[in-house]
Image 1: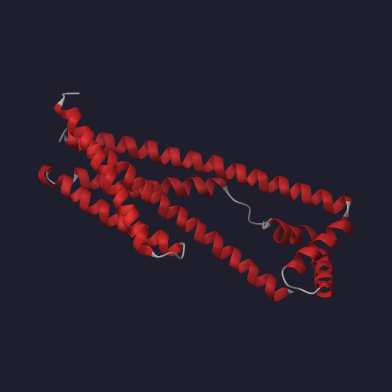
Image 2 (image 1 turned 90 degrees about the vertical axis):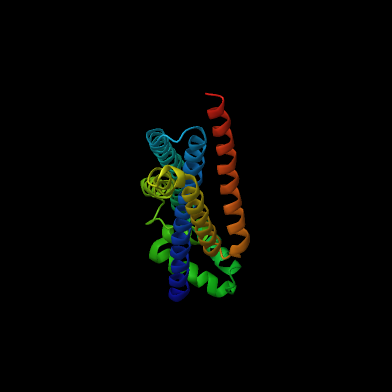
Length: 236
């Protein structure tokens, strides 16, 4: 049983890393679209560099903090659920060890082992570390590697900030006549990259994901620019 358990742990670690990468890509994508829509909308109303920079920085800080707080709350809830599940499993192992042993054997048998081998494997895993065996086989949890809300919060904060910096710099650095085309071109190129990356991480065809990403970003910038232009023309 040592080799299959070892391989399963590696698959779990790989899946966890892929989830973090996917979350980072999506966080960066949110930063790109959110701040691009914001600064392009403001650019429709004014070409003042200070106004564009102020709006972009305010949106970047608000968005990154919101993402970090939301991720912290979400992952904290998940961690609390994992701890509660482990506490319940620990109590069941203490109060009804034979029933838990039979349950573990049944779970192993459902994975393709014969009843005899599953029973023997369950006995050996229980003797080695009963809680860890049940946590991994029954709950799909590694008790030594619970989700960390601070890691998730910082990852979301940094991913959103990295994505948001691109449209912010693109709108304030070029000369006034070039700001809008440079921003639109750089944002659409970045969205194509994040769409391709998210599709590849999910083992999906990238073409449709890229089109969705680029189309959504273009629509967001078009709508906010139109609204900004109308408000600017109205003197609001």
